[in-house]
Image (cartoon, one colour):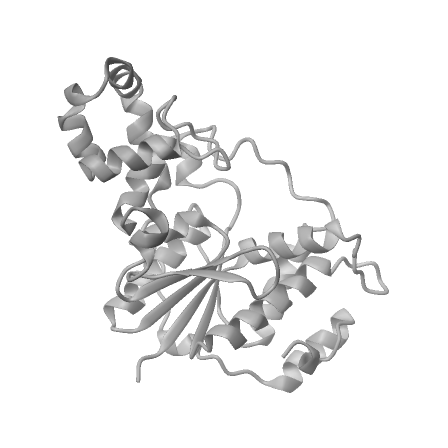
Length: 287
């Protein structure tokens, strides 16, 4: 029987949890005034996913700051993002303490994003013949789908997942996973603040990749495009190449963890003690 390794995009769950509860005005705090609403909702998402997907192993991956090799490549990368809310900042370390209470590894790497740790570990475990499930809200992760790896994208509402795998990917996206980097190279990404090719949106990028398969092949046949489209591509070649580089999740980041470290097994007493410290409900109410 194969193991199933669930790789969790920790920041995606924490931010989602914070804003979901803050939107409802649920600013949980301990008696000492420590904010906990993001961590509390993170736990609900985290444990629901464990219950839904029944992993044998769980590992959480985290961003380690805003400065990465991508900001070195392009200083506008994610520059449009607001600073995190003041109430969320102390929860960055607190959530990792809670994850540790479940004997689940926290993985992060300076100068890289959580995506790169997830991509590298997914390849590592996939190459070992294990089944990998990535839990995130970030569609960039879709480039990692292959025969061993599926991606569960969190949709609105707790427990609502859209799962992408090798069998359903083309039906859902009109592309194969290996085309996602080229797709982002053409369209850019407004959330990550890089433009791609100005004037090419998602529909046009999809049509071009369905016709030419890759950006390299598109450029080899650029003379077949309309004059207006040729001009858009030819005047944005540098940004096209840069956008591809920014979009690509690294599969060779210097991170490694023995799989046995991620076995999903924890000491309930240790978890309950952490919950009491944070004034959370007992563990069984989450399960």
